[in-house]
Image (cartoon, rainbow, N blue to C red; front, side, top):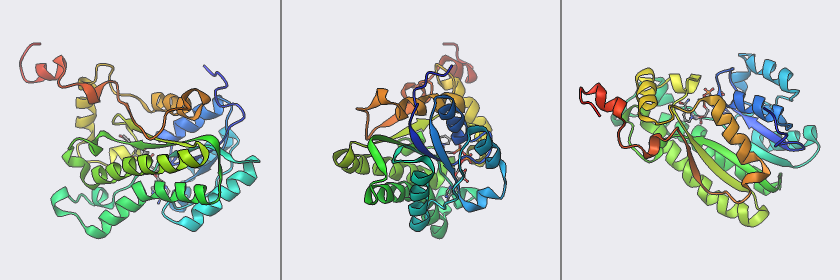
Length: 272
Ligand SMILES: NC(=O)c1ccc[n+]([C@@H]2O[C@H](COP(=O)([O-])OP(=O)(O)OC[C@H]3O[C@@H](n4cnc5c(N)ncnc54)[C@H](O)[C@@H]3O)[C@@H](O)[C@H]2O)c1
């Protein structure tokens, strides 16, 4: 059901790799709510070609940019404003990657070169995006920036290794830059802490399938889907959430506030 919540708004959506990506669902939903936006991803992701289908379906221009590269981000914001005809109202940061996870390195045996890459891609890239936008005054007043996080920033999930530290940094950057951008242009900056979701990034984590099931059983509402996450992103881009900023917002079916569920107790042979 579309309500024109984003009619007239201009955005930048990063991170749509394939139809499972959370960003893909956000783009579809933002389009159905009347937004115009550019799509961006790392040049290497362009080779898969899937993003072309999304661009066609949503009438969007694709602007490749490595989110760790400040010059490419400058070009992204410049070209997005040109293509859309004005300042940017919303930005989705939906970017994460850990070479340590990819190579199966556990937390007590990390490669530090990889660790720095994880932090750069998954957390500093948000700072770089905000920095470029701030310096070039690219985001309109009351604009909204949303990045995606995970509860491993607050609680230990051993399989999430250095991504836990990257998410903690991402959430800290959200608070710190949220203060400065709020003062400067009333731009709000938030993270959504999403349930485990079956995507390329999610599926790359060891034991993901088991953990996905566990989280689903722990959450009174079940795991939040990528589609539900897209709905939540749209509300945060809309004018109905103008006073929400510097927050980490759990979108997890109640997982973060549940100590134990009767379903999980039953798994240990005890009846609730
Ligand atoms: N899937 C989950 O379980 C889950 C849960 C909570 C949060 N998240 C977060 O959601 C976000 C989106 O991930 P997803 O699950 O949709 O997976 P995904 O693999 O579809 O998306 C990750 C994206 O990051 C992009 N990327 C990687 N390096 C980049 C770079 N240098 N520059 C620009 N883009 C780059 C990839 O190309 C890809 O499009 C990530 O921040 C992820 O950590 C995912």
